[in-house]
View (cartoon, rainbow, N blue to C red):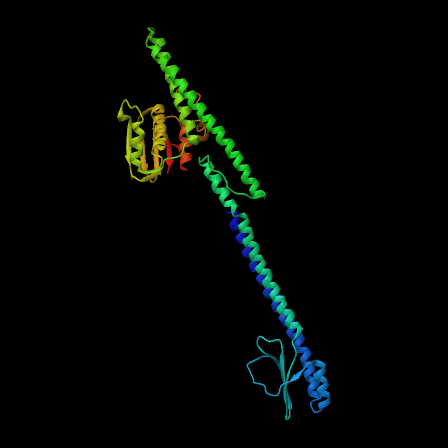
Length: 396
């Protein structure tokens, strides 16, 4: 899970939790305030009811509690806080919508009083508390947006690092800041420049070495033809052929570390035919091909055919009977040959210059090249041994 998803989940959780706490606090506070207000004005209402026939005492009560008599009052559907019916009348305390004043209605015999209270501070305090909770939620949202904006360069850094890892050695991060992200960007750019320089130097050196090696090898092969001793001649031929193969394989292996893939779409049958065209077959009957379903492949045909060619070449080289079998089915290319099971796990043979101790033909680079090509395409190479057959499978 990405860091952005984690932060988003944390923000949503915090927002929900804060909203629940705010709603719960508001609910408790509303009940507490309503209870206090109700008790206060019930007591005032009872005091007024006792003194309803004494105008002087009533006026003193009005002044004391800052009550305002209302002569013309339009009845509305107000929220009723309290209502109690008496023998000769009733007491009703109501609250007008979106208002902080209360309406007190008292009826006793023929007397009917409608009083309006002043703004209740407790109600104002409740409103302030709700505003503070809203501000907290708003600040939380601003903090979330700020953190996302602060971490947004990480996406660019990830893309550039991935691009560099995929072979784009010129990939650099263009972020100018004085924080840790800026330091990380500058450090990556310095490292990328150093690695690009080292890789380019190594490639140039390898190309030069390959070129310089081919010249003496060609001269040596030409000089061999002048040797009369047949046994010595064949031995030297094998030595120079081995040197030529080793040079070609090392250069091919090195190219895979830096070259970009030339992706195209082709069929599995095309891949097999292209791989076989790279082999020097003395007898075509040594190979049987089974195209169970001719599926499409998006890959570099030149490189992938080299990988398959190496697998076929190994199968031909180490098979104890023929023909070897090549299958194309279910997005898999399978190469089977009858022979001895590998003594070690496949991963051992995927390293350069590793092979069975009993096998001295070759340099142990074939499967290493196969693995590099397969990995570069994000495909998978598997090995199995069934019915006395070695089975190598490229999973597309």
